[in-house]
Length: 256
Ligand SMILES: [Zn+2]
Ligand SMILES: [Zn+2]
Image (cartoon, rainbow, N blue to C red; front, top):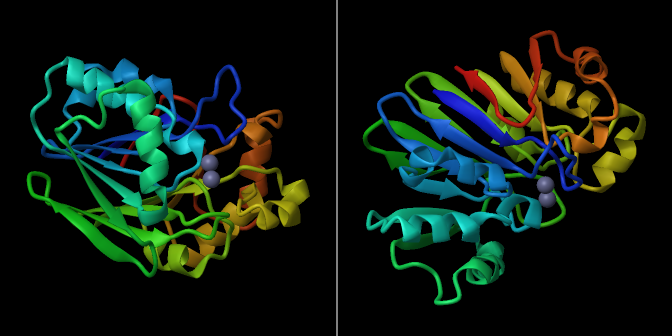
């Protein structure tokens, strides 16, 4: 599967780093989106129109801001195929507001919402074409939030943009994953402050990667720490994790 990080930043965007969104191109055809926080997703053109499912982690604006603009684009392209949007139950009305901002006539008719309450890892849906299971588990954040596991065959990739480290449900979801895309909002120097805000540092991400036994750690949701160079982030995580460590930037693409 191929994962394009459309937006790699935390809630404080920079010129180069925009809000959270991940475009996932699965082997055998299914295309899905995790979060819709960046205008960069509008640049995908044909690919974005083919997305069948959108999985929203939580209701904070840096994860849903451009969902309405995306639906407007799909409507203008006369989309008929059902688009299923999974969102945490407490995000539903919040998301409606963001959608109506761009779509005054209301939520387009091709959209079907499915709400869920993240808890222990559980399957949300099985995508038939690519034989892929999408799982959700509760993240430890300041509002109801999820991380997602994308399981295709014996390969599992887990994406958790917003969580504090050592979150039992997320560690269970990420167990033995091929790749773990992990919150890295704050620098290690303020590791304790990061915990209080429901976020992680490179150190926290490294500790989680080791606990979960993953092969590759990808640091995401990082703009606050972008003032630090990439090597500092990698070094911070490497003090706690021996596997491969990568740092995402906007439009980074990873294949697993
Ligand atoms: Zn966020
Ligand atoms: Zn958040």
